[in-house]
Amino acid sequence: MSRTLLISYDLGGPETSDSYKKLIDKIKALGTWAKPLESFWFVKTSDTVPSVRDALKSAMDSNDKLLVLDVTGVNWSSLNVSSDVTTWMKNNL
Image (cartoon, rainbow, N blue to C red; front, side):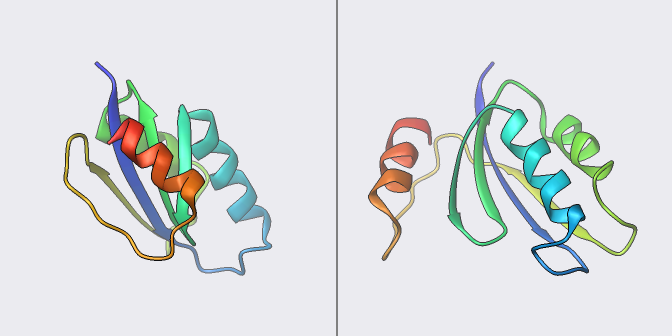
């Protein structure tokens, strides 16, 4: 079953660090995605919430924070989010 997940994180280092690159590469590999805000992603995947958490955990340090939510079918609204992202959201949420 395909679902849309919201992924958000806080990493201890700067966004230019290798930790961010590793995590972002892992997020992009999960499926089709959109990034409406910094450290905030939507991913369309058949993976479960716990399996995504576990897959991303390997790219994180012990003090980093991660949130993964299933947002399939939720209502939403936005302000000043790019049309590429809102189109993705219309098609995938």
